Length: 375
Image (cartoon, rainbow, N blue to C red; front, side):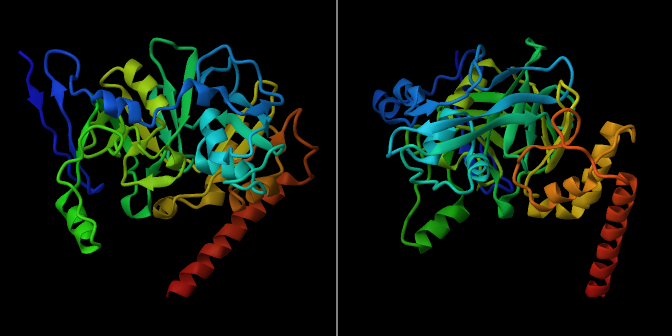
């Protein structure tokens, strides 16, 4: 006999989640036909696209799937598309190409987010340095706003998808946890504090939001062993790829559906924050990229020193690196690939060890000045 369990999850997200699950079979809380019809799932017509692809590499794997390199740390390629529909937004294009809001914005700083315009060329930044973490289970790099999944049954594959994480007052924590229960068509119960705030604004909130198009959890939820945190879908996919949640990990509906169907319960989840990444390409080029650092994690390390130490760990002082480029990457965190060494990099400047030492001294002086200002 099937029994339903109700999970009320309270915590720093200020959310209460009401989830229906089966002990002896699959979750059976189903949406009505009307809810399914109105759900914000992406359609095959939308996936077909309205732009002309200029130089997209041939894809033999499903959306978000890449082969792990035999050597190095880099997957994917940059390519460009030309907008063919004047009604297309940059967000529409981003979702179709498995890119998030901030990624598409930083890659195209001079293109209108809402009206890019017919004939406009749009860069798709679908090239990634794998995060500096063990390649197992799920790795969520918070500053990068991206999830990586290393399926145990496909050791040569990595999957990656854009995500939303907690906004500053509801920051997603750093730590290692695991997945527990998967729930189809979850219901959501706003906490009392949220209902009071809504009532004060003259917008009374319901006690429970049933499954359907108005449910902020979307159609799929994966619970984590870290209480009150989930990986779930959303009924507002335009916000995927920015800091928009109350601590949970949000995904595009089509991405969480795919992950939900294949992800084993008990999978490790590494929530990490690596705003600076460095890695080797298969041709021997050393690349770095930098993302805006999360405000709540700034006290954990000094960004420039962390970046230099990361580069040094990869090079082992065996190659010449232009450390001024490292500094510029940290100071202008836009996610762009920067080549420091190798076939794709310009010739390095001389006396790079002195540059590195000078940068360390610069950071130390800055810290001393900051301490004096605080005194």
